[in-house]
Length: 174
Image (cartoon, rainbow, N blue to C red; front, side):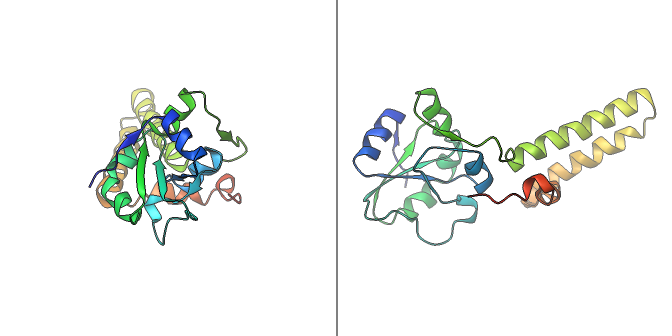
């Protein structure tokens, strides 16, 4: 079962009629930037019913729309008989339409972006060490590459776990 997509303008109209906007991103993403009034229901830890009050209409969104499309069948079943829509283009389209977002720059950037930055920096360091000091620098790049492959195949990212323990990521998030 697929959920129909709607534009940010259509979503705003439905929201003014009492629809509930459901943010399916992770808690850290939502804490950094979100649409005011959106209910957080992280699809990665989806447990329990979607908080919707008395609303009979749900609008799901993520950052770009890719996660909502990828999880469409699960979201359709979680909607439990409600009329459900996907915000086409997600939060990025919402911002592109000039609609309001709440940004808290005191919150750390999303954990997956931190992983991308750290992995990229380590691979680049390994290549530079190999080019300027010793070919053994490529071992660092190879180790990071193997870790990324393992994370993709298994769903477990050791680097994300380590980064989650860092002091800047231990802030209390809403």
